[in-house]
Length: 365
Image (cartoon, rainbow, N blue to C red):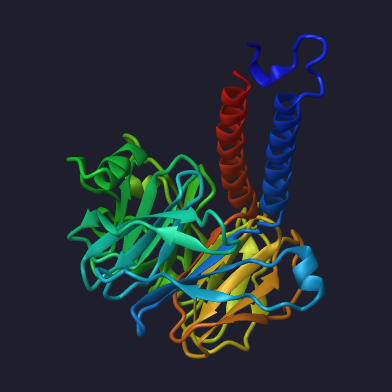
């Protein structure tokens, strides 16, 4: 018989078999439509580390409709991360569904595969943490769009890197290359107690924890120095702060936190004046951009994650800081962008649809 039972002999069009097939088709279409509606409700996730609590938590970002009704973000904790002792910097490889956790106490960068829960919106599941980098005292991490990982080691003045294929091998339990040095203070590169990192896919930015007024609080380098001398590929973007911690970037601006109570912003080309976004925090640390106009920043002393509007190219003055999450000793922040969460959900929708389609086709035979 024909798949789906569309071509049937005259007289059978309204028989029991035909009716059963039409009901099954209706169920499949309903599942697919509902799945797309659910996928459209995804608005990404915010991840935050707490070294004091030895935890990594997350929350689904609010949709426009949820924001309009003043619904709060719901914090959830990853359970089972028993290998992690002191989580600091975080980064998410959205395309591959991997969360990276810097743990200097273990001298390790962990990789954790994460998945959206099949039936509960806003719930993530995860595999056990696996070692991606070892024997490195890394505090901060970032990852670019092709899966290359970058990590800063402030104790030794080093910025490490590892390509995506090596990371994949480590996650699969296979032998792979170890991390390699990209920049080092010993190479006369402008690396001084390096802290937060950010990448735009071409350039790498990092915050210096000391000597910022001498060599630069925020430095722009490259993701691959090639045959060039590292010191020749990096330049200072700002020397108006002695030290900096977290750094995050939009298409037009760089944001960074300092060791006091400030969040500052400069233009991504390094020109123009430095703008004070806020001086009302107490110990701001990590920051992250959601790709859709919002910056998230963690304050470890206040135990909160704040958000503010950060997409404006011509930032003129302070921004309103909105507390969105309460996390004791909040330190590192990372974002799984809304578009990535949506695409993951659509992928699950497609798989569900194909399975249902196959079942229906089998019924028609």
